[in-house]
Image 1 (tube, rainbow, N blue to C red):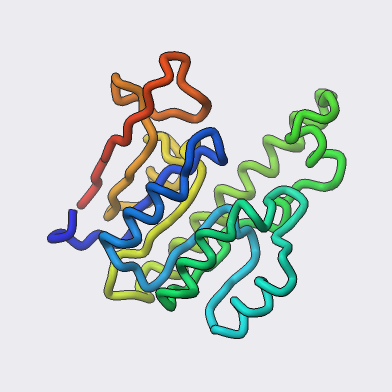
Image 2: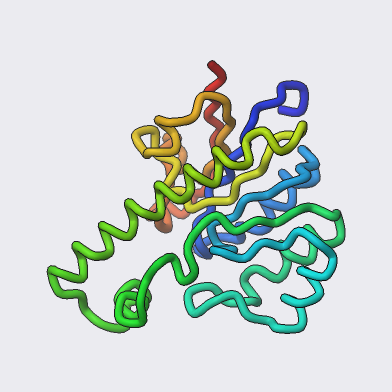
Length: 195
């Protein structure tokens, strides 16, 4: 992995059904990125020491992501002087009602489901725009931490980029996991596109 430089190294995030940070830390130690793009950081960019100090004082990401969930990654990036850049919308673009639906607190109406689909497309476009914006900003590979769901071969990002490595949670058959595996076995698989 270390010998070939790809523009992006994607790591599929499960949003908490396994310990995502352990794998993230392992890869950060291995590839030594100078920039990390993170879906979970939403619209927050931590570039300077002051940015990190402010967020550690504020202790708030958003209504959708807790500070505690992101704290280990932020501390590691701060220590290693890595720029940690959010690549999504605040609260993933969801209003208060949609946040409750996504969290499973209320049942969606058909119009809510359609609105969630519309926002999801906007988010994918935003992710791609951020990847394009940063693709030439580092000599090192840029690490991208994003939900595993966005890494399917037919996703907008995967179809639009040509030089990347993906490390994703998978079952024993190599199928990408976007929810807990019934078998309980979780592995990591690698896919590379280098055209």
